[in-house]
Length: 327
Image: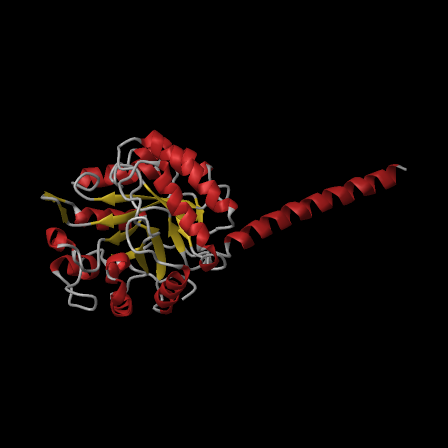
């Protein structure tokens, strides 16, 4: 009887160890089906750390130039392009067919598309954020199954007010809604204050991250005249997020903004030293007021001084960009 009991206990223990082992295997296999977060690092589906090096492309305002601009951006060596989309609330809507077309074009040029909805920019009301969420859900068939090549930036610069608590409460509703709809892609959340209030992330980011049951959310700071004004500010804003154990990218930055300097050299240098991805604003077509932010003179134009800094400069795209493992 004791022998039988001992065998039963041993068999149960072996079974438990096998289940634990398989659980670990399946969890890794699931993670490897797409981009995933571990600690402060974003990984691609091959298990390779993925550090974004690329640009923003304002598709919503230049819808007829896509097939000229994307190949030109790819020629810079960029591994990522952040695409401005619209849910129709402010700008002309991009339907699922157009989104699928964009994904195909960007990935055929061996870049990762980061898709963002621009209509909620600077707004504080949850309805604007929810409209962005509903847009993603309405086109989820373009996203599901492409977790290894498409990243979703939920809403550009939602929550213009420098209020981290309200910002967090909005995203703690938005993220579960996306996940419950079956969207498993890596998500990006811009910080509060038009993307320039980084303190909202160390203050409330852990609760926002916890709202994602897949633990696959990355935070983004837009570094202009506030968040990127000098080297110390750049380093402090990056470190304050990383020290909380949260993943981070610089989703937008310039070299100058609204009459004030931005320390783009330190953004690129410190970003490299910390393994932080960045996406410069923007390829071309800014209004005359912001023409200094044009990286190129046209959709396939020559690089401007700003463009040469981002693409060819020290710590720039050509020097630091590595393609995603799927390519």
